[in-house]
Length: 274
Length: 269
Image 1 (cartoon, rainbow over the protein chains, first blue to last red):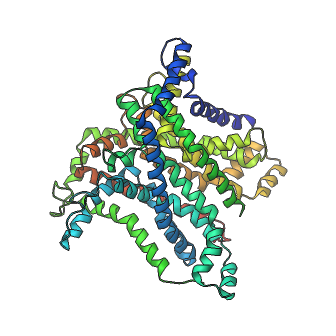
Image 2 (image 1 turned 60 degrees about the horizontal axis):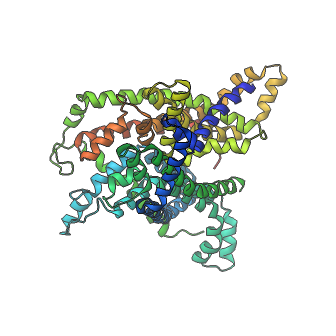
Image 3 (image 1 turned 90 degrees about the horizontal axis):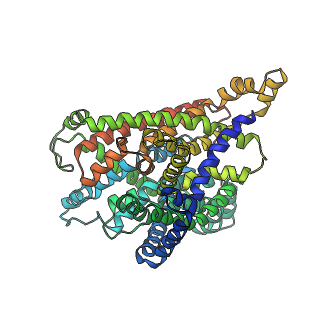
């Protein structure tokens, strides 16, 4: 029986070695046949370059900014939806939930592609606006398009954890609050919102973390000046073919992402316990 | 209880936001015109064109093979990992193990892809295997990240599993292995099915990781679509997208029905 558990353990262990060590000298040294010491200095220079070159710093900052703003918007869009689903009649809930999950299974690439058709210069939205004589809006190749893209594609990740916390909410608390004379808004702010906090954190992290490293959305929807770190890494790797630097970019990205991941795991265990 | 107008409207808007682009894409896939968004009559000619495109068909076939294989491997490994996590509450390195299992769920694709590629390259120079990159490396990469999803699905099923059934089987003299195959496996089967389907769709969908670990001559469908979309919107991608969306919708529907049917009668709300 032990063997059964050890095999996957070893497999995962091998993978973990990869994620953890690929940026360290041994791995980049393996990439070429030069001496280890040469590689070590070479490698450090990649990190120095990372900080001295404005491109990278700017890319990290704008990735974080874009991911953050997009996460907030997703939360604002997703919260009412999750709440509505949690409050919906029983027989509706599963159907609504499935409707939320369904797009998630539909290819991300294709959903982004559907958005392009929607937001293009002569896309559906602009044709619709044109019916009212409104000038076409420029939506593609802007940061706006990237926000829409992230919100659109990651909405299910926000709704599901929110739903799980909201549906477990004890309605007697809400009734008690209402009986004691609190207005709905106040009940929401002082009871519902704090109690759904783990869901908010979990959902936000599930959107924020992948959004930082997002590659497909900015490269298809964003403009040439939309800097995101996933794109920089991709270009570094595929266009510049600079593997060690790409690895350094990835390691730095990992550092940026690790703190949110830890937050996420804490929030998730809080969700599970409740 | 609050039953205002705000929630239903917000939800309705949200759902239309989710579905409007997809629906418009499906509609326009039947468009006659080459201009993707100008409607000029019903036609299925883009579907015809799609099925005469050897590059697309080849990539689609390759993607399906990879997805089926990866989902199967991921299912086996993910189930074992889930069993290990649920059954052995405490073992050395459990936190590390569960962390490693769930990390791929949130890790940005570019990091996963790059790290796997570097691992493959390192293994090649150390062990001489896997030689070069191609379908095999994509399968390995996809299996590993799908495994995490399978593990989560199976884990949730296992944790509301009645242990006494297994204990009864053991008391009646069944060996652990026999108990696993006769009792545990049938009960968690629905989770296995949906886990497999999940892995299958995820693998079919993946662009970033596949791009990193693939070699020349092994372009998966998302890679072909991506390069096409980059060059501009073309109507046959609409047709392809519609087909994929249709298949996925059916798959998810099937998985949900299987899950709902198998739920014990106690009807968990």
